[in-house]
Length: 343
Image (cartoon, rainbow, N blue to C red; front, side):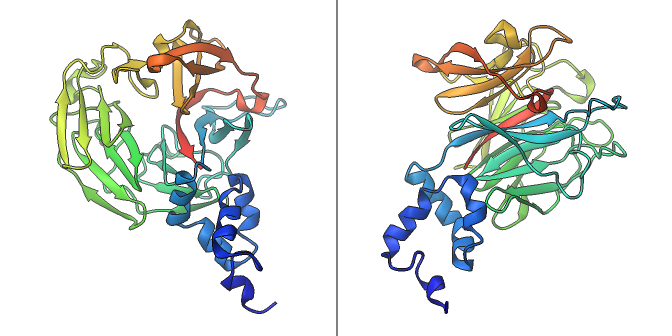
């Protein structure tokens, strides 16, 4: 052997051809490929390789859900369900489940948030499933190695906050503290530097708000004040990544219900609810935009089983036909929240 394998990506091939061969590997093969040699491991995990694959059109969006785990048929459910992360590959149409976070082998923190950037999945906050105490944990999942890494904790404890991620940064805003006081503060996490920085405050408190990224803007939708719990605002605020300023929009959320997990961006840039798109998902709606279509889950009425649908996008960005998916039983549980990951 010798050191030749560490010099050339693929022995006997020009460097650029070797790179293109690796670029065309499906992400599910990265785990095996990363064990070929150290150079392949470092390349496949690198930020530059991710952006090279994306520019070459070799990435695609997969839907990730925080989903209730199945209960063995011989067992009776005791207490609230345990949650894991399910992944739907929109290209192959297959389902998979991410390995548990080592710190929480029996299930994710309740009400944790998930988001993704640069091909990696992040879990932030939530409540410890054993004690129900709020946590500041942040974990990163690497699809190449199928492994978790614990990141720098969130600077302060907050629950039911907005989250969004873009260009290697994760934004959190709003929610409430351990005394149930609604928050207007916001922070950003640099995934490559593994550090948090405080942002300017929003114009008002926003508990149980929802975060979404629109272009180069981090939007925080609706929420309520400490003194008006459950009275969801019609306003929204957005943080401009370029200028570092917050801007407020009146009547940005015209839906009276909680925005968590169901905010949808319409064809004209308006904010609407996935629950309003089809009667089959009017309760507990959660949607993940996959580009040409969206994966939406919900039920027609309280207590009904959740269905999973692919919502086609017609001209103007409006959602068209809903097609029901046949989902394996182990992936049919209640969905708490979701995001897409481009891998």
